[in-house]
Figure 1: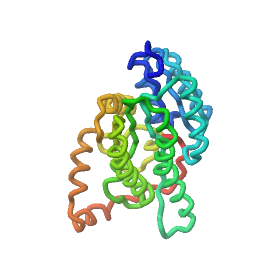
Figure 2: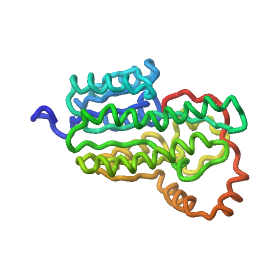
Figure 3: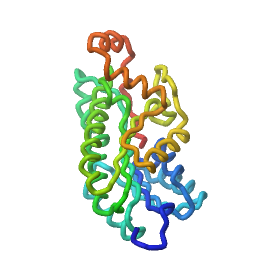
Length: 267
């Protein structure tokens, strides 16, 4: 840390998509008294609400209304936060969106582009912007998804973006590990957030978001490279990745398509 009297407990934290869902829950999980926490997102009112919750717990929130698709804006945020609070000890690239898409529907071209830009390029932009202001033993986490293990019907853009995030974070772990930075890939299953609340299909092992956030913090702080949650989803994910294509296709062809609807909330 820049100041010799700062303890690990007060390491600065940066979270994208911090206005609701997993992002807000992670901010609350890290809300130790006196800890600086940067809250990044596209919705100023939601970020303000998150900040009030952190302040009530004694943390020091800093709000940045920013879109992770805009790399230069993130560069400016990184420099401002670093000047105010010093090196970043924990960086969590969480911002993401989820929509159903169909390749045969021409109107979904723009939706596909948006999902890839936010879910994949947004993670890269975040990591790139904050790389120069990370502490020497920083922890970096990216929120992927079990949907990135295999392609899901009606979710080509979402599954593809999350599969790419998994591969990207693995490369980043190898690259930044040489510098002492630990990178964690987090793959949630069904978590109770605004992103999942409208799903019309069963969501096995649905996990409360605050419980999930506490588990994520433990994995990030411990420097773990990989986390799938809830635990049963880890076993299911392992099985899905190894199912032969004929069996996988037979099972998944009968699944309902992911709904094509607007879900513009931050995760």
